[in-house]
Length: 77
Image 1 (tube, rainbow, N blue to C red):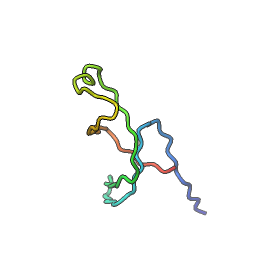
Image 2: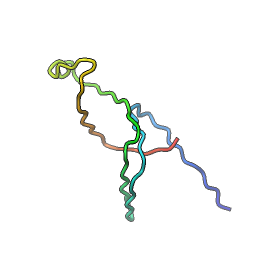
Image 3: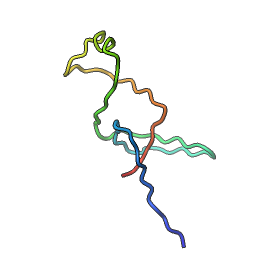
């Protein structure tokens, strides 16, 4: 008998983005999964006050976010 169990990942990341898998390229060891972001998400950053002042950030300013992460971890709820 084979019992298939759904795996749900517990994670501590606050900055999550809802996305749809658009392609999967599998190899023997690693797989490349590409996503399309389907829902706007809120993100947060921590920067030095000196940097915030240098950028002259104000509530309502439109900025670009450069995301530098070690991992992008997909999970299902």
